[in-house]
Image 1 (tube, rainbow, N blue to C red):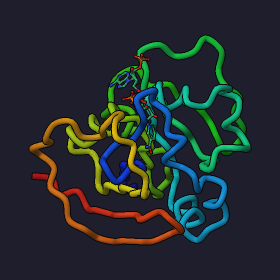
Image 2 (tube, rainbow, N blue to C red):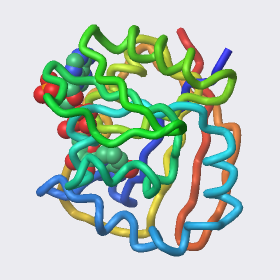
Image 3 (cartoon, rainbow, N blue to C red):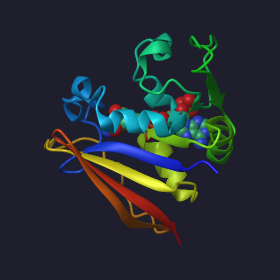
Length: 185
Ligand SMILES: NC(=O)c1ccc[n+]([C@@H]2O[C@H](COP(=O)([O-])OP(=O)(O)OC[C@H]3O[C@@H](n4cnc5c(N)ncnc54)[C@H](OP(=O)(O)O)[C@@H]3O)[C@@H](O)[C@H]2O)c1
């Protein structure tokens, strides 16, 4: 059974986006990450990606994903309004716009991942839903030494059903990656 990993990069003061919704200040190492052991391992373990419609729209051009996005795998996008024109796809990266809920999205992504992990890359709403529904196996939080002061938080309220057990810490440049197993209560 594929592992479901929810993951985000956070500032020291707990923001995953600035007030305008941008993550630029959280990824000063974006170019430097390419080709690192960290990135290669992430790519190797990932069989499918799940994201929300807003995270999908962070790419200005939906045709950008093929050949450019780090995960060249099937991508599932939760939305109530799929685009009228399908973005560019190829034999590795396909798009599925899922309109019937998070359980269905995880089930479809798990089947497409063929035993590899499903990476839930955001945004905030989708990660919260996956955790609340008890569908996440691991939480990966990358902490960047950046103070945003204000912005959007991943966790605004307690998720009573989520317990966490630390399973790993990895340092890559300025980035500290914290890995937790999600203990379902
Ligand atoms: N720091 C990081 O690593 C990181 C990574 C990724 C994103 N982010 C940040 O996260 C923020 C985006 O998060 P977000 O919570 O605003 O948006 P999101 O989770 O990316 O997308 C939310 C949208 O997805 C659709 N959706 C969500 N759940 C659904 C469901 N169960 N059924 C059908 N459609 C569903 C809805 O779109 P419709 O309008 O189509 O219904 C909803 O408006 C951005 O500010 C971004 O910068 C940060």
